[in-house]
Length: 217
Length: 216
Image (cartoon, rainbow over all chains, first blue to last red; front, top):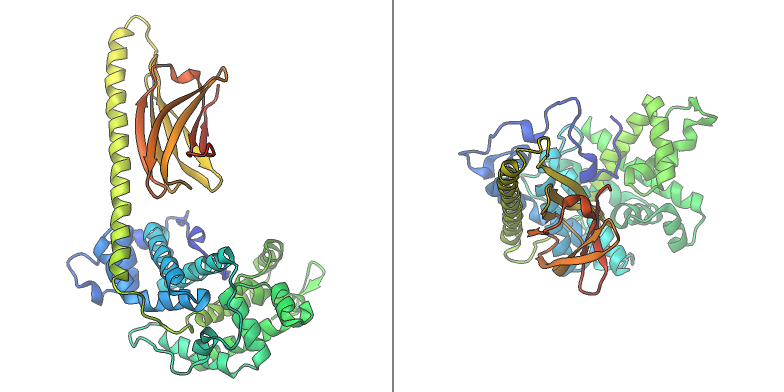
């Protein structure tokens, strides 16, 4: 299935074929310790409007989601608003989440990223100085990882690949990934031709893709 | 990426654009072109899938950070508040049904000699600049009830509900409070539903926030 980064809550519509979605997976959260349940089970709980499932989901992922929001907006107050709205959107649209298209964390992260970029544009405050604390955090090898994170290995490998990129490719890729900047915006900011900006983004992402494929195979 | 030609452009020509689509930063036109190509080219579709996975993993590289104390509880409260709004909406709809039944019963008694009179609701979607934001229902009969629900509307605070009649006359039928985009209320209009052309929700500065239009 073709899937792209622009996925948002709107792209997780109910499957017209009637195939299973989170709302139809039964009620595995009932009578169980929510801490031991999978994300998919918690999403099913949220689809059934179980607030305990919602609270468990927020507690499990709040540091990751708040981290993404903060990395993008660089303001704790705005990041809190963004992270809260992201979780509420997951809550409101849990019934139409399609587990075949992405993981729950990936879906929530994309929602967070899109909301954070909207917030940035609203405040017209792009944090694009490569020397600021956000870039330093992204480049840090000591980024904290929750041991229980399903994607921990993938995150580690993607982080390593990002750090190994030549500076100009890394800048272009981070601007695109975290700030949602178009190739033209990057070309303008870096004062390079549009074609060069596109190539830097593509080559950088290719290297991350290769790193994931190599280690994961 | 395959080098098979497609519509005059080889797959190599799409290499940069595939990455931009995966990152969600391409224009709508470019995205449409790439996705159309991927519908016909399995190799590019698979490549886009791989690049999307890489883009997703990259996003998760952002370092985790601890939100302010009480964050999870506040979000959970909002989830509960959403349920409460849903309950209010459900209650108003239940009242609407009850009133309909009562009106229907009364009209039925009065209209036994004019059979075929239909006492049901006519409804219209409330739309605003952000899309559909609620519903308006009017009970049929000589004295219509108006029921309105607002969901995620771009409004908060006091608003005015104004109806515009088919003859162009405008009447403010009540002032109501919208909380964070949600509200529900009912009002007895004492005029037939068929006389109503449009219902507007207007903020204190006179700006129309949402409207529902009924066919003549």
